[in-house]
Length: 166
Image (tube, rainbow, N blue to C red; front, side):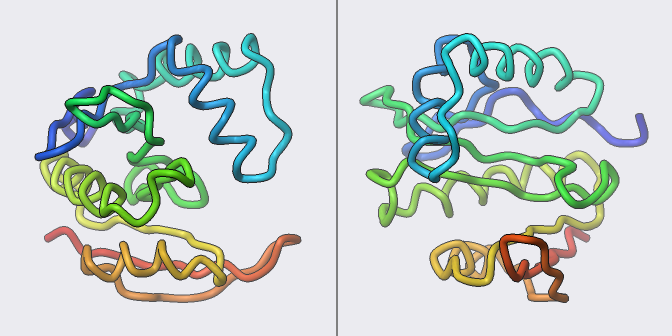
């Protein structure tokens, strides 16, 4: 692998970011349901989590769950994925439960993930966000991402933003 692996655990002032565990299945199911997708069964959610955990070491990038230090509650996830991009230039991805919005958690977690991505030796990150998602653009702006180009799919316009790490 030409890059250093991303850590499986990161800590910020308020958050613990860690690799998914099977016990995160309930939080994951709720997150999927909130976004309007069909909620997976516990078995399906657990299987997705197992797959993500098993493939993380080989890829060297992954999504990490977000939990507040004191409360220990599941807030969502943040990390690096191939998504619409590549392993060399992965995408920053984050999603929080609606009740966690507006508290700066996405920015705090994404700042830690971007720093970890820089330490892997990568030179660039991407983020793809639906054109209507103003709160995500605010997070990306705070991190220094700049809008690069647009694409579209059956759900509408996608804004590609890029961050140079070097």
